[in-house]
Image 1 (tube, rainbow, N blue to C red):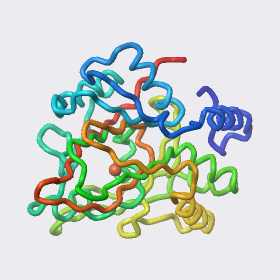
Image 2: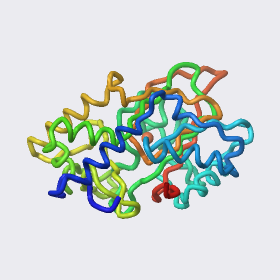
Image 3: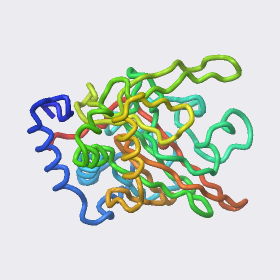
Image 4: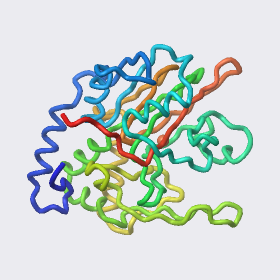
Amino acid sequence: MHRSILSSNPDSAPYCRWRDAKLAAQPARPEQFLIDIADPLKLTADERKSLQYPLQHYRFVIFRTRKPAAVDKNTLRELGLQFGLTTLDGNLCADDDQISSLRVFDHGRGNAYIPYSNKPLSWHTDGYYNPASQRIHSLILYCVQDAAEGGDNQIMDHEMAYIQLREHKPLLASALEQPDALTIPANIENGEQIRSATVGPVFFLSPQDGQLYMRYSARERNIVWKDDPLVREAVKELKKMMHPDNPYVYQYRLKPGEGLLSANILHRRLGFADTDAQQRLMFRARYFEALKLAES
Ligand SMILES: [Fe+2]
C-alpha cells in the first residue's frame, strides 16, 4: 500500500482501488478459509501459498493440522516464526512461556477475567488496551480441546468493517480514525496501577506494514469513547454490523487440531459448557509483529 487509504487523504483513489480489489477477492464459500497443513513445524511451499491467499485478502485463515496430538505451544511458536512472528505479548494471565492457555480457571488472577471463564466474550481485537508501541498485529488461537457444548467464535475481517462503515457514511470512518477516538482508562488492581491509560484511534495504518488495523472492544465497562456525536454514531453502526446477519461475519467452532491465524481481526466467543470429560482448552499467542507475507 503506497498511498494512504484513510479518509484523511483528500485523494480517495487509493481507497477506491483497495476497496474494489478487496471486495472482488471475498470468498465465494467459507471453506476457502480452511487450509490443511501436514506439519506446522515446517510448512511446504504449497501450504504456505494456500495460507497466504486468505491471509492477504481476508486477513485470517483457519488451519487444520493432521496430527493434533503432536502440536504443543512450541509448535505454534515455530508456525508463527514462519510468518515472521517473533515477539509474543505475554499479558497478565499468560503462562510463563508467554502463550496463554485459555480454559476455565477457578482460582487465581485468571478468575477475574472473562477469557478464563465460560462466559461469552464480546467483539474485540486483542490488546486494544495496549499502548501504541505495543500494538498486537497478529494472533494465533489454537484449539487443543473444544467444549462439550458451545464456545464457537464469530469473526469478521476488520477491513470489511471499515469498508462497510465508510460506504455507509464516510464521516463515520473519519470519526474513528481520530487519534483520540477511544480511551482505555488505567487498570488499577487493589489500589495499584498495573497499566496506564491508553488513548488512540480505532482504525489506523500500521507503520510496520502499512496495512489497516483496528483497536476495538464492544465492552461498555472500562471503555471511554470520545465525546463526539459522530463517534457515538459510528460505534452504534459498528455494533449493528457485527451481527450474524452480516455476510462478512462468520461463525466457526474450532475443533481439536484447528487454529485461527489472523492479522488480529475482529472476533468474539460464544459462551460454552464443559463437562468432567471434556474441557475447552485453547492456546493463544499474541504478537507485536505484522504477518510477513510474500509479495504477490
Ligand atoms: Fe481475543
